[in-house]
Image 1 (tube, rainbow, N blue to C red):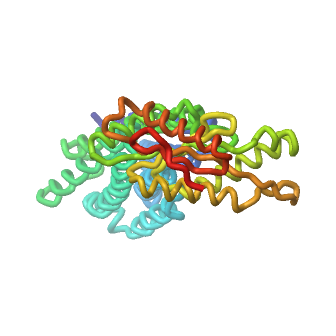
Image 2 (cartoon, rainbow, N blue to C red):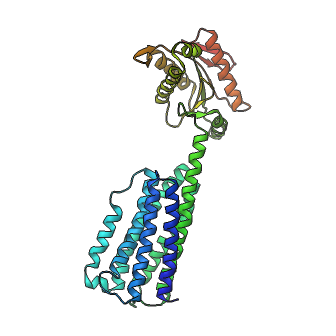
Length: 392
């Protein structure tokens, strides 16, 4: 396989990456990480087109291999910065620009431009470091969030980085110097690896984008638009997961159900918009009380549920009472006028002999009705004997 054929194949793979990311970006303009990946494809493409023209017309000097390598290195930097944007929402500022300038400065030296060995030995570690940063970010995210959409991309970048390390070691232990137009197995293998890598990037990055879109749609379908809490549809899977974890670890978890007292009267007196504002402020305050790992749901018009993961009876009592006091002590402001609002709460702690999570829900629901029967603005805790202890 001659050099021009390899460059053409790499250019085609780069064009596929650029166009694929470009079309994805048109559909997701707010996702800046896709723009970075499109820029990576564009850099790879222009790099190969520059190399092809220079070889075809025997152009030497800074343009080739200088500019071609500058764009190639910038492409790798854009891949890494795009991954950082995807995971953290921010990327190292001017990463691609910095890598490109570093590569350009190296190529200002005639000795560097004229030595394939020097270019390979100096630039390869930079690519490996960029790949290593991408691998680290993807690994931590995939393990922490169980992001199955990230694994193909992680594997692709890892294999590419490993082959570069192997080829670098092979070069350092070899006594043969590389020639730019050489056709030995060392360079052919490297060229084929680049073609495969860029081709797989087009596939795996698109897989990540589609996965992110699916997760976003699922989140929208599971989220109450008014409060931002999860809806009833999302309750059962979450409750089942908490119960399975409790059975496996031996820990208990709790359910708090609360209802806004006299909510119909609030709507009748203040209007439905005021009712919406009240629900938003109440749920915002409730969210500040619970932990990040706890789950909050809107299960009815003015009825809400909180799952406290890994809690005991004392913690359940404390959070329930704190929730009641927080709502009762802070009026909801509507047009600079205070609306005094209270909630009734029913809580229950999981038991090892529960037939299912629904049994826990039923106990908390009965405790809620007892709070209402006791005059509202009350916390009732379901006890093991299925009675409820009333706290005011």
